[in-house]
Length: 84
Image (cartoon, rainbow, N blue to C red; front, side, top):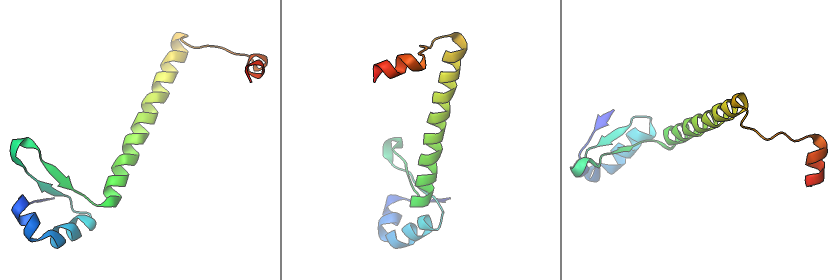
């Protein structure tokens, strides 16, 4: 990981973007602890996929807990057909 100040980023934008595209995260410290990272699209998409997977697994775990505690609504096939 590279750490670069905003002034360095502005002066050498292409270089830093090329590094990020190659997989090297660029950390940019900012005033007020409003720091940012510059990362590649592939890295961003990987992070988003991991986030969605974690959310999905949490939802499945919650559903399993509801099933175990009996906090479910049971419907027969006949009931479902009448609901159509």
